Length: 607
Ligand code: ADP
Image 1 (cartoon, rainbow, N blue to C red):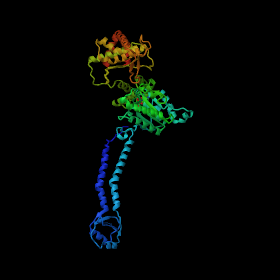
Image 2: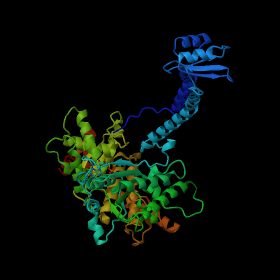
Image 3: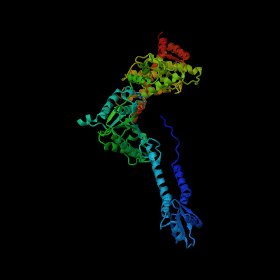
Image 4: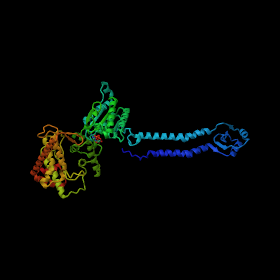
């Protein structure tokens, strides 16, 4: 797809060439041409030509003191100086010359004027016009080009047989169902207009990154067989103020010409963020102008023009309310992370594109890849294919897929990370600590795999737990158990190694996050009842929370978070003390084998 572009020469280069041509033309070619037209000869030649009868038109100019004449065929113009010659007129008459007042000299003046002044101007103008046109045509190209500024870079994906269809987008059934109506409308608008219904002008696709929002928008265009204009919100915001607005104008102009069509604005939050209400908005001016233009354009056309605007964002809460009010982006289609079934379908769609061994269990892979987005799943399948090639096989196996989940989650195995024996033992205890605590509590997801092979992400080892099915609700006990499992690694270090390490930093972060959410958002504390102390501001991008309580309450929250984690940590230590022999046995086994499966783990635990 990547277009290889030749390095561009600056415009001045081409103008230089034209100038050079004009100078050469004027200084060499024109004189030569004129020379050819008027040849200066001596009086003797003139006489000879008269005597030979080779004379056509003759003009004798006393004032200029020269004679201009042509040969018989009037092909060549000559001139010669005037000489006192009383017989000249008679001889000329005899030779059959025609005396005339004006011959070619005058047109020559005009011609030379045209050639030296008008022609270069015409060439300059035509050249400039040509170059401008050429650059304008390169929509989607280099937008720093002066000529292209203000022209939208919307790419036109004109329908094609290999265009994306709904069947390419796996899972996301609700989103597809919602968008099918749009496709139907684009196919047969009369059905809707007859009853008086008008389509929503704008549809907002909201969801985490990589869930297929762009794909869905393309699929709508593909299914409806209409052109697809796509532009990213950040592309509107240019370096010159006012350019974003003119790009919006231009995009809509193009779209209206091509209607019915789909206009897709990715990352609409880049321009559609809330406008500041202060008078001095400073650096946001450009963005605001762009947003205002977008709103104006959306208001400017009727619902039934056939232009459907789809926009995607993963930060819907930051959008300006003016953008989401009825008449603009009034329909919101959630495109969520896929559930178990969705993940399996996505894996299936992508596995079709590569060669896989027969009997590969994609539902197992889907279960392992809990929380993965469509883009991550596509990546997992591709990694598996790459791994197969690396290992000299021509089909991806179950092991390739399983390994690539780990690659996508935790990074590649770090081959040259040399842990000392002691470090390796500590990591083994740490991981078995997690697994053992998980296994000894009810309601914990079964352990799938434990490994102490370091990863490029920095993880020295990890324990993979895989839920059997989808989880939509979690009980208080389950969250507590989860926190307890997070603390299990550090607890094992305390119980078996006698000291603590930095290896638990990620566990600490996760445990704190959960404990905090229990108290501030899930109403699971003893004394705050069902009061929200935090609101999630960024649910699709990591879920940042902002506090909404007094300083005293914050202190109390912090205290309670510590209590929750501490209680679970103590519980984990107790579980490990109760299972001390198993802890040693399993850590030793992991130390020797580096990677063990959940089945191996359970076997040793249950003997
Ligand atoms: P978004 O716009 O939501 O960030 P994209 O539509 O760009 O995500 O998806 C990125 C890639 O992830 C797609 O090219 C596709 O390969 C894969 N993908 C994401 N969701 C799905 C899905 N539901 N079905 C199939 N492939 C998907």
